[in-house]
Amino acid sequence: MFSKTSYIMSLILSIGFSGASGQPDLREVSGTILLETPVERKLHSLSPYARTRYGKTTHTKSKPNEITEVVLFIPQEQLPTTLSLKPDTFSIKQHNLQLIPHILVIPVGSVVNFPNHDNVFHNIFSLSPTKRFDLGRYPEGESRSVTFDEPGVVKVFCDIHAEMNALIYVIDTPLYTRPNQAGEFSLSSIPPGKYDLHIWHDILGEQVITIDLAAGDLNDLTIKLSN
Figure 1 (tube, rainbow, N blue to C red):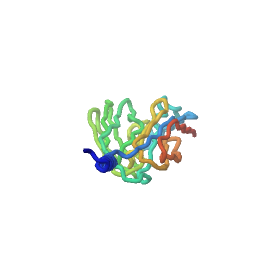
Figure 2: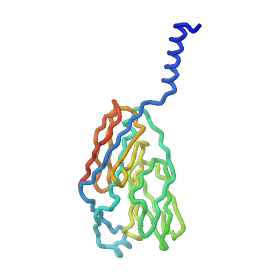
Figure 3: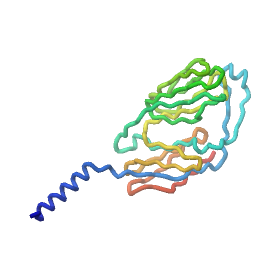
């Protein structure tokens, strides 16, 4: 016969194994980014060759997908335990005298390929302290790669075509995301706690807001960005 004592012991063991094997209670923050003012982008001629051909600085208004250039993240150092990064291989292609995508977010340790899809030579380089490199001139159909092993922002240019530029945000946390074209974002798998949520845009700069996920998820957050 199944005794009361046996039942209690079975219940204790069941709870113990459930706690040992169960996943931690993770949180989510979600909401909408609002771009309150148009973003004016400036194109600069940097190299002597480029200045000769493209010496005039031009201005462009906000791109249709400007809101998708925002990056949201929670720094690794704020997390209760270190979360592992998953380096990967990414691409910034040279096409129609543009670097696509304009903003690329990658984990530390990732590799970025720079394939040339134009029928002209390109020379992709960066003078950023985070990662300095110069890939030299290479023609259509060729690709060269760079490994990014330090966190930070890397500004990428073409030494031949001044209008070509991109930004690589090398990040040391797995907790990052970007909004869709409607400005909606969601960041999940966050341990319970109180954090600084960083909102970065290459023109508008960086905002930091405090979010409290100790008691549960935080939804319907509205973040306004302006010049």
